[in-house]
Amino acid sequence: MKALMLGAAAALLASTAVQAQMKPEEMVETRQAGYQFMSWNMGKIKAQVIDGKEPFDQAKVAAAADVIAAIANSGMGSLFSPDTTTEQLGDKTRLKPEFFQNLDEAGRIGKQFNTAANQLASVAKSGDQAAIKKAFGDVGASCKSCHDKFRAD
Image 1 (spheres, rainbow, N blue to C red):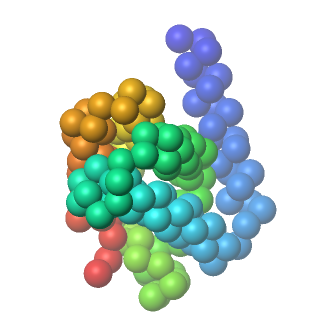
Image 2 (image 1 turned 90 degrees about the vertical axis):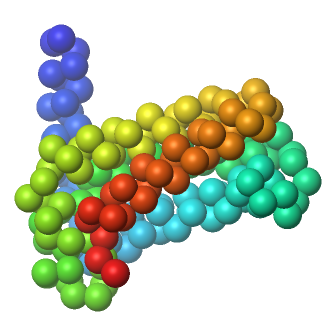
C-alpha cells in the first residue's frame, strides 16, 4: 500500500513538473503526436488482422502493439491540464472542458485504455490472430469511449 501511495505521489509530481515546463500549446502538440503515432500503428495492425489488406506478419503486428502499449504507459496523462481544452485554446485542441469536471471517469477510461493496450501487446506476441483481433477491438473501444465523452467534433 505504501508503495502504491509513493507511486501515486511520484506520478502527481511528474505531472506537475511536465505541466510547469511546457506551454499549453506544446502539451497539446505532444499528446496529439503520441495519439497520431498510436493511430498509425493501429492502422498497421488493422490492415493485417482486421481487413486482410496486407499479409499477416506476427513480428510487425507485435512491434506495432508494443509501440501502442509503450505510448499508453508513457505518462500521457501529464499532458492534460485545464489550460489545454477547447475553452482556452479553441480549435488547436478537441479536449472538452468536461474532462476536468469528470476526472474520475477520465481516469477510469485511461486505465481501461492502458489495460487494453498492454493486453494487445501481450497477445500480439502469441500470433493468435483471433486473440489479437479481440484485443485490438478492446483498444478501439476504449479510444472510442474517451472520444465520445471528452473529444469535441
